[in-house]
Structures are given as structure tokens and as C-alpha cells.
Amino acid sequence: MSHTAELEYTPAVAAATLPIYEHVKSVIPEFEWPVHAPYIEAINRLKRERNAVILAHNYMTPEIFHGVADIVGDSLALARKAAETEADVIVLAGVHFMAETAKLMSPEKTVLMPDMAAGCSLAASITGADVRLLREKYPGVPVVTYVNTSAEVKAESDICMTSGNAVKIVESLGVDRVICLPDQYLSRYIASQTDVEVIYWEGSCEVHERFTGQELRDYREQFSDIVIVAHPECPEDVLKEADFVGSTAKMINYVGEAQPKRVLLVTECSMSDNVAVEYPNIDFVRPCNLCPHMKRITLPKILAALTELSPAVEIDPEIAERARVSVERMLTIG
Ligand code: 13P
Ligand code: SF4
Image (cartoon, rainbow, N blue to C red):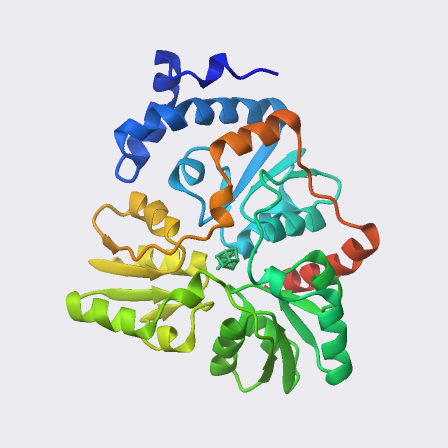
């Protein structure tokens, strides 16, 4: 299937994508639109032909997030929506562990990952063998695993969590001690919110660990009215400076409800663009830490994946069966 003709910025493409451009023009310069628009038009058309749905994480760039995504959200929302969708094909505009989770939730569907190399420093920090060793060291202590892990690690775990439900999941187990994997900072944050003792792994997110408390204090000095909203993958000294801590979806909800005059979202940079589109009245201060894995996902790669129905995520059935139990347990709790 050739898309050569469709990739020109014709008057028809300009007209078809005008409402989308009107929505995003505060964050996408006009000279960039002729590059994105033909892909947006082609993807949205092909999506219908394929009965496909595009699930996009909050860290996707605005032309993906606002241009082609059907469902957007944090890791928890994407896992839930992957389980509910009636489409034949899911395109996961996010990173590999998110596509694996979607495949676990919808094993009969084709789950496309536009770039298989879109990984995650947290997922890369731990293996199934590491989890088995931890279980030997702490017999009987439940293993609560962040969704930012491989299916193999989920398969060795008792239950999954996301940054949106971590404390609730830990407390639901009714035990005094848990092992939380693999994000040391999320684990420390959980420990600060509960009486349950948390044993943690030394993994970290390469994006959130770059923020510092000093940086935030400097912003407060510069802008006395700034509201700081942080993700729990950030180090403790960063979270100490925050007015609110939560998953990406909770951060967005907080901004929508509080309507601060000026806000700093201490997380991956594209999210500020995506939220700023909805709230032109709010001034977003943007220290720009980008996730190199998320940024591998582009409109041309999404179009290629939909065209070729490849690359598709496959998981060893024995691992998938056990990993699915951990994700499903999480989804029944919340
Ligand atoms: P959430 O969107 O679930 O908060 O996760 C953030 C993140 O870093 C995903 O990779
Ligand atoms: Fe992983 Fe951090 Fe990138 Fe999320 S932002 S995918 S946690 S490296």
C-alpha cells in the first residue's frame, strides 16, 4: 500500500485537519503543520479501515496526543482501556511495557508497537531471575510490581501497581511488609504514605530522577505564585517541594480542578504541551526533560505500523498467563 500521494499537504488534507490544528495551534507552530497533517489524515483514515484504536500515553507529542489518539491517559487508564476496547487492532503510542500490558489484557487482538526499541529505564533495571532471588531472601513477603516492567517480571510478581494506585494496592494486601519493584523513588513515596514496611529495588526513571529540589526552590524564588505538581517517580527532595504528587492522570486532574495561575509539572516535558492546549489561561513553566523512549514514537512510525500491521507484540503464553494474573488482580482492586 503506497502513501506517497497522501503524504502531500494538499488543500484537501489542510481542510480535513484544520479543526485539529485550530485546537493545537498554541503548541505546534504553523510552519510545522504541513509536515504532520498528511500523516494525521492518513492515520485517521487507515484506523477506520483497520478497525484500530490508538492508545496514547500522556507523554506523547501533541501531534500524536491531539491528532490521532482515540484514548489518552496514564498507565492505569491505558491498561483498563486495552481490556475494554472492541477494536481488532490496538496501536500503543507509548513504550514497550505498555504494549505488553495491552496484549496481556487483550490477547486475541493485534497489538502494534510503532517502535519496538521504545523501552524504559525502570523496565530494564530488573529481570524475572532478580525477583526469584528476592523471594528467596524474603520468603512469604508479597511482591508488588510497577507496571513499568517486562511481562517476565510481572509473571514472577503477586500483583501489579501503577503510580495511580500504588498506596491503595499495597494497603489492600493487609500485610506488614511488602517488596515494591523496581522504582526506588516510587517505593519511598509509598513508604511515606503508609505504615506498611516497604522493601525496594534500586531502579529509577531516567527522566524523573534528573529533577532536583534545588531546581524547584529556584523556580519558587523566581515565581512566587508557582504551583508545583510532581510525579512520584521523582526523588524525595523533589517531592518535598511539591504542592501535589500523583500519576500523570492525577496531575492533569489536579491542574484542571485547581486552575492555578502558574504551574510547573515535574514530569516528562510533552505532557505540559498536551495540557496547555486545554488551559490557555494557565502559564506552564517548562523545564524540559524528555523521555528518549517515548520520543521514539512518531507519526510516520504509527502510519507504517498500521499499514503493515507490524511490529506486533507477542508474549510467551506461559509467561503471559502468569503476568496477566498480576495485572488483573490490580485492576480488580483499583
Ligand atoms: P503514569 O502515566 O502511569 O503516571 O506513568 C508515568 C510514566 O513514567 C510512564 O512511563
Ligand atoms: Fe520509563 Fe521514565 Fe520514560 Fe516513563 S518516563 S517510560 S518511567 S524512562
